[in-house]
Image 1 (cartoon, one colour):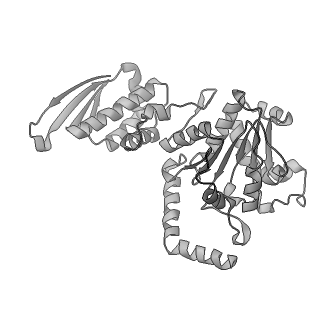
Image 2: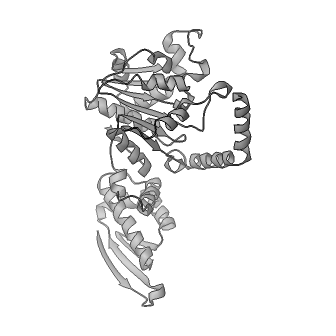
Image 3: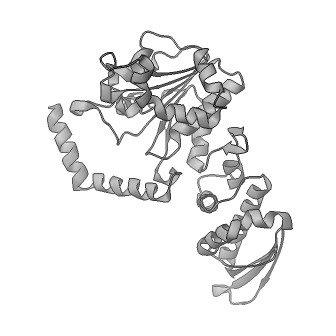
Length: 346
């Protein structure tokens, strides 16, 4: 990408600069997007005024605005060059990363990191916090992924588990959730064990089928390489040479969380995911996830990764909904809810 700049106004207080960028012709469509969807986002979000003709982009504005816009364009071109399909959401996230003064990581490093690639589909972090979460899983034995719905905490953990299995870093994957609605007492429910637990574990099955060949999943489950089971079935076991994921951990009791964490065996990794604001335990019981975050903080090789509404990668309205409920909990509605749960505990 070539860049030329000239000053159109010599007034230092309000200096207007125009910068001309030549984009490699083969990257223009990837940068601007189908029917210019990325161009529309750039025009709306960049601090400098942007004009495109062919493969030439001109940026006009104050020198700092133009410099910031040049950096965004350069990073997006680098992303397109890696083969990463650019979308309006990725454009916005690249700009967020560049505006984050606490990180030296470039958007191209963060947003082009493939965890799994299958049939042209790439599973990769889509935000800076997601990249930090994935890095933490690589660097630590136990990682807690905390955050609201849609932040990718379970999906990315599943991708790392499948990656570890493919690389032969572990010999099996164990996926578990608390079956809160059944009180973990599944014996009284009709049907076979599989029929009893499937409704609670379906999201984990769905993620597995996203990441592996559909015909491979049942074979690996039959061979015991992949195990999907309710949390109650973890009791009394030692889980070695495994990648273990506990999902919906906010619905564990303190006893269940301690039981699960102490199943850890040699050459294993654990990822615990949950949202402490979505506790469904009956009778105002204390969440084991909240207890664990309090008493395990600071222990070496245990990491707490915090994801926020800014990391939601579902429909953009999901982030707005999460924020709206968060504001409600910080005001009277949250206070009333806490008061009711407190009275139950007393």
